[in-house]
Image 1 (tube, rainbow, N blue to C red):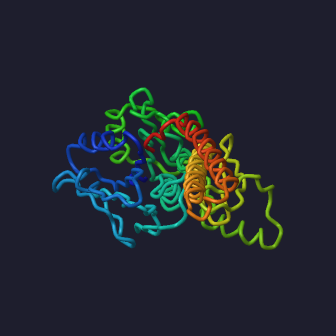
Image 2: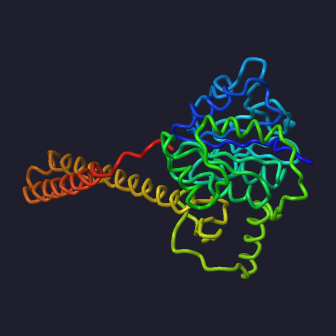
Length: 331
């Protein structure tokens, strides 16, 4: 008999309040270890443990790499580190970003499934795009239980909707129902013999195998014509049922939605860079036109002014394009 005592919760935009509501509904320490990943900027100060902790009944920490996992504790991913579970310990990783973020939800879910199999419960809450979907699918294949927040209740329904649309969620509930379900799962023994789990290679093993295969010219599949928005490397297409993901040999892993978001961000960066260069060109040519040495050469002055005007015109065209780009939502 086993209990579902490894609870992994992933959230992004609008998800912090949902996580707090789940934890606050437990009247006594839950007999499980709780792991929380909420997307955050890499350079942000995090007060997440203070926000999530419940006095002495359920402490919350940003763990140190190598800490042993204990029941009745919340382990929150610190900024700029993936939260990984390995050999009954917490590992903090500064490895490649996944879905454009670090910490990402998928690495936690995937590593938990590989380490604890059917003992894992994965929960996806409010957030944009689709981080967590692939991780939930891995938890399911290892015999664990997967839960998605009811999208109509989520502040940003993208992540739970993705989990549901890809058949990655066993259970769909509002936050209050999720709290009750997690409590029940952690306190109810399950006959492990009735659980079908599919053991898989770890993600790191898969990456190492693919790199070696590429070196030997034996890598299966065809590389895409797309470049990784994080490092510029060639992306290889991966299929997981109906879900398509992309991975470069460095290890950056992206869903289609995250890749589209990354390309959009790179496009905007390139446009702003072009605006800067054109504005600098206009300033330089106007400076050249006003040089005393050019007073005797009206043709050179006219050419400098023409090039300055042309650069200003092109920069204004790009600025109008940039105005039409919608603001990026918090992830």
